[in-house]
Length: 345
Image (cartoon, rainbow, N blue to C red):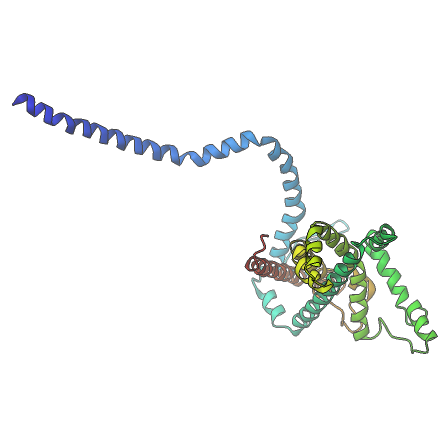
């Protein structure tokens, strides 16, 4: 009996020991699993320390150049800082700042003022018009330059020349061309018996002029980007489509457009951001005139901070923050739209 009792109890004891061992194993597994994240981080740093060392200076410089001004601008937008109450030094006299924190008061005033919505409306029209014409012309010219034509290299270089000229030089050249009295454009019109056009003196013509100049500056970049995309499309697709009886328009719609979609989606986003903040063309060509008809958001923010007296730093900073928010929202919506179309970006 004693032997049987012992033999029966042995499996139970073994099972208990096994369960205890299993419990200890599970506890050990949980403990080791908890330290996996830190261990992975240490291994990543040890393995890629050289990459981290190379990236660190760039991150530091970007943080100083972009991060601090951004945070400073957000803070100023929540105050009533202007030329009269900021910290300044006049001769040997140091005057401390006296501006105060006002919260969202600046944003409330801006959003409740028709000036903001008028500027925003024209900025959207300006951006959509410039990007639309730039993309259309760039794609058409890229398709033409992608063919085997005589003098193709010369045409490609000629199309890229405007991109190599500094923007302010191009704008000043166009300003002379648009001169109502002695400009080349009006002289050509006068030779054809057409009255001179007040290119920069009439609100409507001024808007046409700034869009035309910006399109001229942006087309070369679009041509280069679209040429790269077109050259990545296999030529066999066009040959097969032509053998199947597809016409030029069908080949363009079913092969060219899908083939350049990935590149075009990126360059359209970049072009939109650049055009939305395109300060040199507007400021150097029209100064926002005539009658503030060509003033966009960024030029008005500049006017508040550097031209108007007293200079309103807080309101200008609030305009800058709103511009950043608008572009961020556009980027988010644009990215989601691309994802719904199957694009990975």
